[in-house]
Length: 539
Image (cartoon, rainbow, N blue to C red; front, top):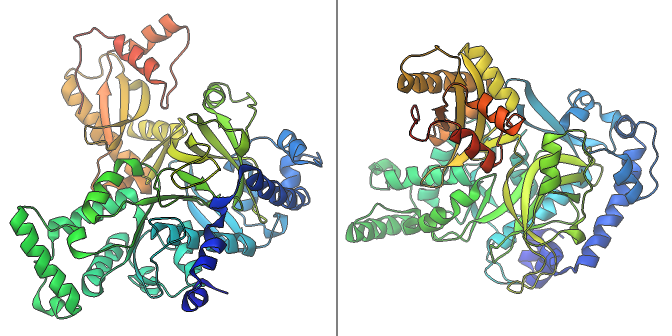
């Protein structure tokens, strides 16, 4: 039976066990599911054309042999087959292709195939997220048929577009705006109409990127509800008119703007994407409910969710087979691409340690031992508060070779090189780091050294560099352009280092510094190569 059918029969315990029962697994039970599904996937992968291209004639018989024979992969290993959508070469028959941006300045898009079995798993797990988002304790949830969701994510062919499609197979959930209308709107239009409809009809659920949810919440706060004309107010439900009047009195009494929590009583609030930790506290203050973080991606599909404790994500055992590269080995791999790290399984991770996630997508998925580029910290192997006995994780960030800002853009070394080359600026050397300002907001900090004699007024030079490089980042990367357009963010900060700083560093260290997100101690050492009182050009 579907979720809707079980809700009508008030089978609440059965609903919880069906969708959220994975939280009751012991680690041995969890690993049994992982290994059983991995054995099925291994058979499919090894017998298809894509698998043959990765394995190069090798034929693993066990999971251990598979982990030894299949190298760690990236999208380049699949691009020839997947971008041409060669379905006959895949482990399973794709019923839909999901796409996203790949790498600005080099590759436009990447595509990922989803089988029916993958979609079924996605559907069951997104229902689990929905229930957990509206839960405050184990076994209890407040979701009801007909609840309305303010939906701030991209439609198909992006992976987030699967959520309304698959939830619609299970339950009568209403999206604001309606999905069939939203697909023909710009991002800004969807959010404006969504909030207008929420003010008219009320809303029980909210799902979006953490950064986007914060931006649109701020917009709602700034606009309040007092600027609606009479024709708009006449469209509002009576109870919403009452809330508006009450919110206006309360905000005036307390000397503050109207907040979303004054107007809406959310049952559940879900956020996806990166940098959510920068926004969750303020989102909770704005809406009166703590956002629940989930994690999904184009290649891995939906893989993780927090529980009612909002204290770390649990990975679904039936989405992917999980392996983990230790932070030490990940750093070694960044420095020496030929290095072959030993991966750990879910029952081998340690609390407090950081890992790069490696995935094999189950149920006929295309990706095997895939470096998806995300880093997690294991925050515990069990949790007394919610009674779980499996590891839970906190999302840290992308791997050092990628700088992701607010879940919108993935800036690579190639992208920065392309922007500098196209700009024609006299940049002798550079290093880029993701940093956070005093408000805990992420930004791209570019430290550059210009060629000797290129500029005479250094303070002006930094401004010129920033303005020109921003233009070229927007030119080669649509997502970077959207940061300013949608979130109002200008993520670039430029600092000019004194001529000779990079040479001095290489002379002292006998090696160069990594261009992308070098260790903080190394970046600090590079900056110290200048005179202690010499600092200019920062914007």
